[in-house]
Image 1 (cartoon, rainbow, N blue to C red):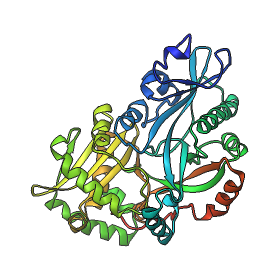
Image 2 (image 1 turned 90 degrees about the horizontal axis):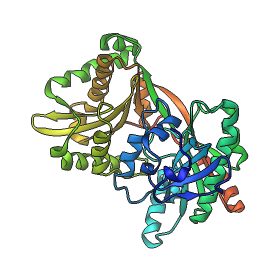
Image 3 (image 1 turned 120 degrees about the vertical axis):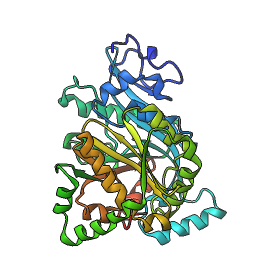
Image 4 (image 1 turned 90 degrees about the vertical axis):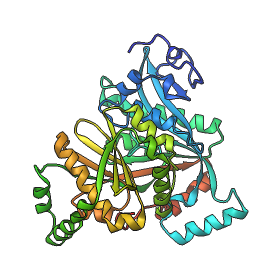
Length: 393
């Protein structure tokens, strides 16, 4: 996609951070629509959470976030990009000690701004990981310098928006050493983030898969799978008639969760299904006529990503719906020839038990005030996550 001037792409709400004669030119868009599907996806080839997914997130009405997109242009084409967002961040959100989180929440009733900082963050709260995107024809040797330009533009924009705290969210271990070094040299401190759990679907049947589990787990799963005779599963790409019930299940599930950052809306779920035809789906679990659980997923040619599972706590456990959904998703992978099942973040104990492997992610953070940055580094041991992650909701 050749463009004589980036402003021909960024049609509304564009912030140009470098002069028109600069190369590369750094721009911030206030909507991914101003960039366009072709230009964005060219920097993220093969990415499942691509332009269509990010547009669904943008249009989901999550009022606590302001969405932005930073991009580099050179010779009339976009060569690098990352999504970003602005929000008011409560520092205890990622503190592992529950007592400290609860104490902060109580104090905030009387002091609303307590431990709350204006945050600018590269990445998205609704994607599995955060990677910079580069056009395929950008040589690897150039990419560290381009990432440095993205970070520089990001920090200048954060300054202009009064965001003293800035971060790079959920950087996966697959990011090369040279690119990680760029983030380190920009002064960001690293702390472990929630890892990504995934399972290789390199078996030909669920029976073969069960045979790979430990004897105790295999026996437990066979017992749990007996609940299938009581459960009706519907695969849908439209659940308008179920929206109130799904959102009730979602809110109940979120309230039980230890980690609460973004609050998804009904429009998020419907937009993902509407914006990604053929690449998104939902499984809905009924006992008689009562909906007890819902599972929203997105897919590519060789990967299925579990975006959200919510269920009625008491009745869902009674019918082992978490485990039924796990086996249902693996059955879908086998039927569709999908080789990898990515089961999301948290509740790792059971995912490891069921054969998943964990891939490490890193959260990078930085405060404009040097003294505060030193304090955040000292607190980094608290800003981490339990890899076991407890029991499924």
